[in-house]
Image (cartoon, rainbow, N blue to C red; front, top):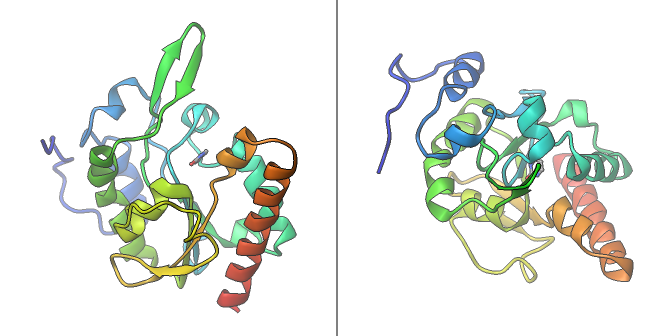
Length: 204
Ligand code: URA
């Protein structure tokens, strides 16, 4: 069920893409979410970091990775020597998906269909930016980028090939680390930093 697409022609610039994505109705997530959270950062960076979907904070602020998972990511990037201002941060799905629970909005993982609909934007973003390296944070991003839905554990820390042919380094999603505790969380966090350091090295 492909819904209405903004009908002012395919976007040519990143600015046009952001503008049209703000009015996207390709799937139902646009109805409950506050706004589209498009990618942000340095379009010339060479490094694209892809998460799952905006969370509560991102939905309200309109920027990717500004909530607790984003803070963890930014600290891990700094430890790995990656300048967040010299990378492009985005998500596989660009609207927040949630279930209302009292005053709270509980995050829900987007479906494969929602990922597929939103891949139109991710593909476009990638065609425009042509990143030298992409880091996939978690299973949803890894699936959106490579088409492979296999479990992440054996894939983490490895470089795979995106559907468009570019290299994709697979790592944990920072939200997963936030949900773990004790030594498990510490190990996963260290692996995230090690993977991001590998990304920095691959970029040269
Ligand atoms: N989690 C994501 O996957 N993306 C964000 O932008 C924030 C949290």
